[in-house]
Image (tube, rainbow, N blue to C red):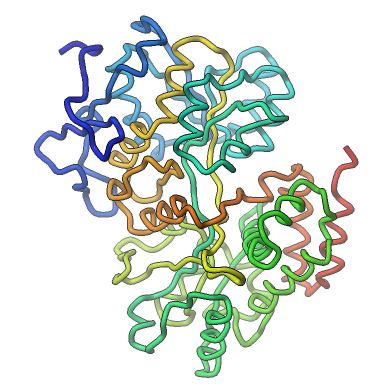
Length: 455
């Protein structure tokens, strides 16, 4: 059949996706390296793209920070769209993405679409006048399949520009299921239970927590996630939003309370730093290595995002009954734990029909389900039309469950929403000082507040 005649003869999960697989089940995957499903085995319903007109021979250029080898599943996920519409999607990944994208936009050489990893960068680009508002088809998809907060993060001054793409969940605590079972420990459901468990482990002579915030020029960023996660739990999402938008000072008493709550774990010598050293060792331990003491029993818990699964040594089984797994960082108030996360957004620099059609595809549950099947572990979307069983990793499935929980409050990584001088500058530096030199909480937060730009 020709590309435009490839129609879905059936629906999967009511999403309008036909998964026509060549001799394999829809959820068959290989081990840790990805699925056996090939993009060429999958088709989509072409009807939603017909309203954009005849697109045969058109080209869409995509620019992103996602490079080899992580780019391969992205490129493969576009194949059904290309076969359906006749559009040729040209993918370009760059490790200099953020700096180069601004240069390209300012020089009049913008791509058709870029995947923006921070809402703050989106706002900067919108200010140039080069980004065009998202078409109504994209807006309709986002309204239907995402928590409303995601639309807000893709908007600038009330105008919607960019649909969310991939996502990551940061509110996880990694642990060893077998070690917990052998010791008779239960997964804590509340913050109080987690602290009680930490005390129990410490009383046994072990260190319950391990952590590391070193990351080259970005040292300190893991500590920002700790603060953001806890502020969501102690003060709630409304205060979190006020803090991120600088409607309250960075050193507001509620933020002081949150950081002191973090300090009850990270600066407690009875709790840290299992297998790695004393409290100060957190500042010099590479974040990718910080959870590894769990594997030899030197540490019991490590707070880090879903993407940490890529840091476990080859052969480590990540599963609820495997070598390592994770549980949601418990709530301090209420029943459902808030979810801190991040992700990318698709911004367009023209309103050509092919560009708009591709934007629409990327915002659809069709794309999310195809991307899940051609990807290995480490990718998830907050699109509620994503069939969780299509994800190959138990951690990714758990993250998707959190994103799709209507009771869970989602908030985007605060440091990615703040001005660069703060979120990727003073905040990193001062939280590192808070650990490395035991700089007082109040002074740390005050120095970050003083770094906030005047306008």
